[in-house]
Image 1 (tube, rainbow, N blue to C red):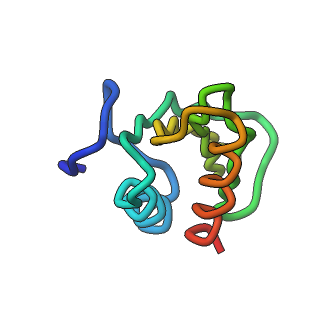
Image 2 (image 1 turned 45 degrees about the vertical axis):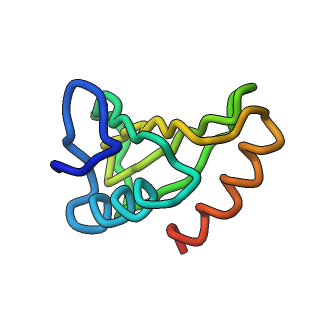
Length: 100
């Protein structure tokens, strides 16, 4: 993706344009330090369309974004400027606007 703030072994994002656009918006937020695309897993159960949701922050306030397209799933790890779970929750709620 060639954008500052990306890390990890690869930059592949599932979801086509929707997925890439969403992750680029999130990576540009002032409270996000780094976005790390996770492993892409292909499941057995059929799914419908593209979906995204934030999972609970960890104890340091970092987030995980779960992307689904059909039966394919990918976790995106988001390193934030938060230093606690509660700060991470606030950032998560703020970033949810990009999903809607």
